[in-house]
Image (tube, rainbow, N blue to C red; front, side, top):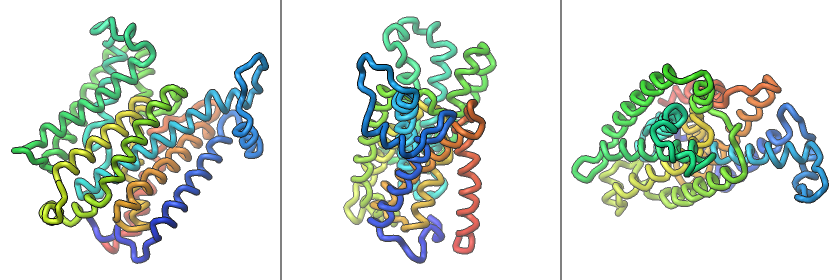
Length: 352
């Protein structure tokens, strides 16, 4: 890992996490009031303390907008950013490479490819599937595709019981290229309606948020976060090299396997609902590392918080910049993340 990721002055971990939590809260409030239907901050508080009661009374328009559309979308934004930021920090720690991000191991590509197959050919290949899963068909297929792609990359990287990280990187590149080629072929044979559905997965959106789905995704992301926090000390040891970590008593292969599982669980769950949202997993860990150094006890939760704030801001911009139309979230995260990443590189190039 390059030396420029080690800041001269580091924020204490409690101060870092408190600051990032405050930043996420401010982004949450700003995003809650933004959109084609604006809601004032004072009214937001009233809506929170007085949720609509399911009774004979008709809810007001702002109650309907907030509790039916905006609140689940905000929670999905938090889950998405937290999952991507956490996954980026985990993979950069495992690979000891600052360029690693969730897209590297094929999670997002696998989810998008499985969703595309379900949209274009799912009913013809397996007619019973829509009857069995109903409205969850696409989400389940995408989540299964994400897990399958990650398992394939991990299996290819296994050499005599050890995980070869270089092989894993190359396998991820190959899976991404194969998925891209198949997605291109599928888009050629899709109808106009299927093509519009495919764009959702390729460009990313939080428009599919609903309470039942967000609850499931939130539970999986929380599970991955809690499991990942237990890997903080082993990842710090792994930063010194596998031989040194093994000498310190770290079960290196088990740490790699658990980290990849956490990434597949968290990113697969959110990608199944949002499609491909890039760059957050690359930018968030770098931002936290520049503020507080490479220690994973601050880096893992800090990346999750900063990722959540980034996605909240990007989604609020996507809903307001061209209202009432909506811009693709994946395009915005790349547009915001790429300049930010260049700024970080320019700041740290003298130390690289």
